[in-house]
Image (tube, rainbow, N blue to C red; front, side):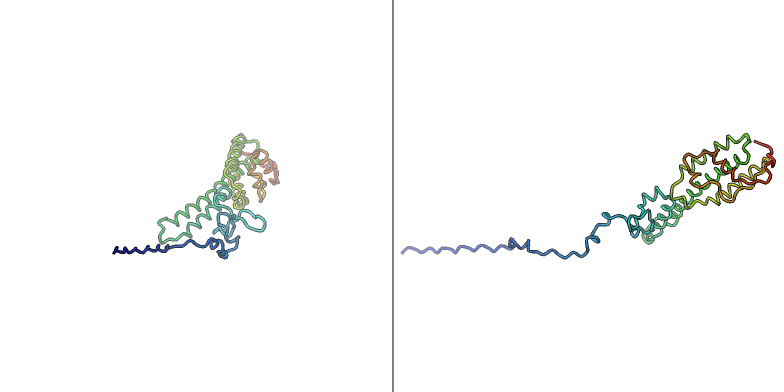
Length: 239
Protein backbone atom coordinates (compact mmCIF):
# COMPACT_ATOMS: atom_id res chain seq x y z
CA UNK A 1 0.00 0.00 0.00
CA UNK A 2 1.47 3.28 -1.05
CA UNK A 3 2.63 5.53 1.75
CA UNK A 4 0.64 8.73 2.12
CA UNK A 5 2.77 11.82 2.23
CA UNK A 6 1.54 14.60 4.46
CA UNK A 7 1.54 18.01 2.92
CA UNK A 8 3.01 20.64 5.23
CA UNK A 9 0.74 23.57 5.87
CA UNK A 10 1.61 26.76 4.11
CA UNK A 11 2.81 29.34 6.75
CA UNK A 12 0.67 32.38 7.01
CA UNK A 13 2.24 35.66 6.15
CA UNK A 14 3.18 37.67 9.17
CA UNK A 15 1.12 40.75 9.68
CA UNK A 16 2.90 43.97 8.85
CA UNK A 17 4.06 45.86 11.92
CA UNK A 18 2.87 49.12 10.50
CA UNK A 19 0.05 50.03 8.25
CA UNK A 20 -0.28 52.88 5.85
CA UNK A 21 -2.85 55.38 7.02
CA UNK A 22 -6.03 55.60 5.06
CA UNK A 23 -5.61 57.92 2.06
CA UNK A 24 -7.92 60.57 3.42
CA UNK A 25 -6.59 60.59 6.94
CA UNK A 26 -3.82 63.06 6.18
CA UNK A 27 -6.26 65.46 4.64
CA UNK A 28 -8.87 65.15 7.35
CA UNK A 29 -6.53 66.40 10.07
CA UNK A 30 -7.68 69.71 11.43
CA UNK A 31 -5.16 72.52 11.65
CA UNK A 32 -4.18 73.37 15.18
CA UNK A 33 -5.57 76.71 16.32
CA UNK A 34 -3.03 79.52 16.18
CA UNK A 35 -1.84 80.59 19.59
CA UNK A 36 -0.96 84.11 18.44
CA UNK A 37 -2.48 86.43 15.96
CA UNK A 38 -0.61 87.38 12.81
CA UNK A 39 0.75 90.57 14.29
CA UNK A 40 2.21 88.82 17.33
CA UNK A 41 3.57 85.95 15.24
CA UNK A 42 5.60 88.30 13.10
CA UNK A 43 9.33 87.70 13.70
CA UNK A 44 11.11 90.48 15.55
CA UNK A 45 13.54 91.00 12.68
CA UNK A 46 10.66 91.42 10.21
CA UNK A 47 9.02 94.33 11.96
CA UNK A 48 10.35 97.87 12.36
CA UNK A 49 12.33 98.72 15.45
CA UNK A 50 10.17 100.63 17.89
CA UNK A 51 10.94 102.73 20.91
CA UNK A 52 9.62 99.98 23.20
CA UNK A 53 12.25 97.57 21.85
CA UNK A 54 15.14 99.89 22.69
CA UNK A 55 16.25 99.72 26.35
CA UNK A 56 17.48 103.31 26.24
CA UNK A 57 14.27 104.75 24.74
CA UNK A 58 16.16 106.80 22.14
CA UNK A 59 13.69 107.93 19.49
CA UNK A 60 14.80 109.20 16.12
CA UNK A 61 11.57 110.21 14.45
CA UNK A 62 7.86 109.52 14.29
CA UNK A 63 6.20 107.45 11.58
CA UNK A 64 2.47 107.90 11.72
CA UNK A 65 1.36 107.28 15.26
CA UNK A 66 4.32 105.11 16.25
CA UNK A 67 7.72 106.13 17.55
CA UNK A 68 10.55 104.57 15.58
CA UNK A 69 13.65 103.92 17.68
CA UNK A 70 17.03 104.85 16.27
CA UNK A 71 19.24 101.89 15.48
CA UNK A 72 22.64 102.04 17.24
CA UNK A 73 24.51 102.38 13.94
CA UNK A 74 22.32 105.33 12.92
CA UNK A 75 22.65 106.89 16.35
CA UNK A 76 26.44 106.60 16.20
CA UNK A 77 26.48 108.72 13.02
CA UNK A 78 23.80 111.27 13.90
CA UNK A 79 24.07 111.71 17.68
CA UNK A 80 27.41 110.41 18.88
CA UNK A 81 27.03 111.85 22.37
CA UNK A 82 23.71 110.10 22.97
CA UNK A 83 25.19 106.90 21.51
CA UNK A 84 28.00 106.98 24.08
CA UNK A 85 25.58 107.53 26.96
CA UNK A 86 23.24 104.74 25.80
CA UNK A 87 26.04 102.26 25.20
CA UNK A 88 27.46 102.98 28.64
CA UNK A 89 24.03 102.38 30.18
CA UNK A 90 23.70 99.07 28.32
CA UNK A 91 27.12 97.99 29.56
CA UNK A 92 26.21 98.75 33.15
CA UNK A 93 23.03 96.68 32.75
CA UNK A 94 25.02 93.52 31.92
CA UNK A 95 25.12 90.78 34.58
CA UNK A 96 28.27 90.97 36.69
CA UNK A 97 28.44 87.41 38.05
CA UNK A 98 29.89 85.69 34.98
CA UNK A 99 31.27 88.72 33.16
CA UNK A 100 35.01 89.38 33.15
CA UNK A 101 34.70 92.80 31.51
CA UNK A 102 35.73 95.85 33.51
CA UNK A 103 32.25 97.23 32.95
CA UNK A 104 32.38 100.36 35.11
CA UNK A 105 35.63 101.67 33.69
CA UNK A 106 34.70 100.80 30.09
CA UNK A 107 31.36 102.57 30.47
CA UNK A 108 33.07 105.62 31.96
CA UNK A 109 35.57 105.76 29.09
CA UNK A 110 32.75 105.62 26.54
CA UNK A 111 30.88 108.40 28.31
CA UNK A 112 34.04 110.52 28.34
CA UNK A 113 34.25 110.17 24.56
CA UNK A 114 30.85 111.80 24.22
CA UNK A 115 31.70 114.60 26.63
CA UNK A 116 35.00 115.19 24.82
CA UNK A 117 33.12 115.81 21.56
CA UNK A 118 31.02 118.53 23.18
CA UNK A 119 34.15 120.07 24.72
CA UNK A 120 35.95 120.05 21.36
CA UNK A 121 33.15 121.83 19.48
CA UNK A 122 32.68 124.32 22.30
CA UNK A 123 36.40 125.13 22.33
CA UNK A 124 36.54 125.63 18.57
CA UNK A 125 33.55 127.98 18.65
CA UNK A 126 34.99 129.88 21.61
CA UNK A 127 38.29 130.46 19.81
CA UNK A 128 36.45 131.51 16.67
CA UNK A 129 34.47 134.10 18.61
CA UNK A 130 37.62 135.37 20.34
CA UNK A 131 39.18 136.19 16.97
CA UNK A 132 35.95 137.77 15.73
CA UNK A 133 35.85 140.08 18.76
CA UNK A 134 39.47 141.05 18.16
CA UNK A 135 38.73 141.88 14.51
CA UNK A 136 35.64 143.85 15.51
CA UNK A 137 37.35 145.82 18.28
CA UNK A 138 40.73 146.43 16.66
CA UNK A 139 40.06 146.44 12.89
CA UNK A 140 43.24 148.39 12.05
CA UNK A 141 45.64 146.07 13.84
CA UNK A 142 48.40 144.50 11.74
CA UNK A 143 47.29 141.09 13.05
CA UNK A 144 43.82 141.29 11.50
CA UNK A 145 44.80 139.10 8.54
CA UNK A 146 46.15 136.49 10.96
CA UNK A 147 42.98 136.64 13.05
CA UNK A 148 40.85 136.18 9.94
CA UNK A 149 42.83 133.11 8.94
CA UNK A 150 42.65 131.66 12.44
CA UNK A 151 38.90 132.27 12.71
CA UNK A 152 38.33 130.65 9.32
CA UNK A 153 40.34 127.55 10.20
CA UNK A 154 38.83 127.10 13.65
CA UNK A 155 35.30 127.55 12.35
CA UNK A 156 36.00 125.02 9.59
CA UNK A 157 37.19 122.47 12.14
CA UNK A 158 34.00 123.05 14.13
CA UNK A 159 31.88 122.41 11.04
CA UNK A 160 33.70 119.14 10.34
CA UNK A 161 33.43 117.91 13.94
CA UNK A 162 29.79 118.92 14.41
CA UNK A 163 26.92 116.42 14.36
CA UNK A 164 23.21 117.35 14.58
CA UNK A 165 22.79 115.67 17.94
CA UNK A 166 25.17 118.17 19.56
CA UNK A 167 23.03 121.24 18.89
CA UNK A 168 20.95 121.00 22.06
CA UNK A 169 24.07 120.31 24.13
CA UNK A 170 26.14 123.31 23.04
CA UNK A 171 25.84 126.12 25.57
CA UNK A 172 26.27 129.14 23.26
CA UNK A 173 25.62 131.80 25.97
CA UNK A 174 28.40 130.31 28.11
CA UNK A 175 30.73 129.97 25.11
CA UNK A 176 30.12 133.62 24.21
CA UNK A 177 30.66 134.80 27.78
CA UNK A 178 34.04 133.07 28.00
CA UNK A 179 35.04 134.27 24.52
CA UNK A 180 34.31 137.90 25.47
CA UNK A 181 36.52 137.64 28.53
CA UNK A 182 39.33 135.96 26.61
CA UNK A 183 39.28 138.58 23.85
CA UNK A 184 39.08 141.47 26.32
CA UNK A 185 42.03 140.15 28.36
CA UNK A 186 44.11 139.55 25.23
CA UNK A 187 43.52 143.01 23.75
CA UNK A 188 44.06 144.70 27.10
CA UNK A 189 47.65 143.45 27.08
CA UNK A 190 48.23 145.75 24.11
CA UNK A 191 46.33 148.70 25.50
CA UNK A 192 43.22 148.14 23.44
CA UNK A 193 40.07 149.05 25.33
CA UNK A 194 37.18 146.79 24.36
CA UNK A 195 33.78 148.51 24.34
CA UNK A 196 30.87 146.86 26.15
CA UNK A 197 29.78 143.76 24.29
CA UNK A 198 26.21 142.43 24.20
CA UNK A 199 25.11 139.87 26.74
CA UNK A 200 23.78 137.58 24.02
CA UNK A 201 25.97 136.26 21.26
CA UNK A 202 25.44 138.32 18.09
CA UNK A 203 25.75 135.15 16.01
CA UNK A 204 23.54 132.07 16.11
CA UNK A 205 24.74 128.49 16.01
CA UNK A 206 23.50 128.26 12.44
CA UNK A 207 25.71 131.20 11.49
CA UNK A 208 28.73 129.88 13.38
CA UNK A 209 28.37 126.43 11.79
CA UNK A 210 27.62 127.63 8.28
CA UNK A 211 29.87 126.02 5.65
CA UNK A 212 29.96 129.39 3.85
CA UNK A 213 31.06 131.28 6.95
CA UNK A 214 32.91 134.57 6.36
CA UNK A 215 35.06 135.81 9.28
CA UNK A 216 34.96 139.43 8.15
CA UNK A 217 31.18 139.44 7.73
CA UNK A 218 30.75 137.77 11.11
CA UNK A 219 33.11 140.28 12.73
CA UNK A 220 31.08 143.09 11.19
CA UNK A 221 27.97 141.73 12.91
CA UNK A 222 29.81 141.60 16.22
CA UNK A 223 31.04 145.17 15.70
CA UNK A 224 27.53 146.39 14.94
CA UNK A 225 26.34 145.05 18.28
CA UNK A 226 29.01 146.70 20.40
CA UNK A 227 28.03 149.66 22.53
CA UNK A 228 30.46 152.40 23.42
CA UNK A 229 29.94 155.86 24.87
CA UNK A 230 33.36 157.01 23.76
CA UNK A 231 34.16 156.03 20.20
CA UNK A 232 37.55 157.70 20.56
CA UNK A 233 38.74 155.40 23.33
CA UNK A 234 42.40 154.74 22.83
CA UNK A 235 43.78 152.12 20.58
CA UNK A 236 47.05 151.31 22.31
CA UNK A 237 50.11 149.54 21.07
CA UNK A 238 49.21 147.47 18.05
CA UNK A 239 50.65 144.15 17.04
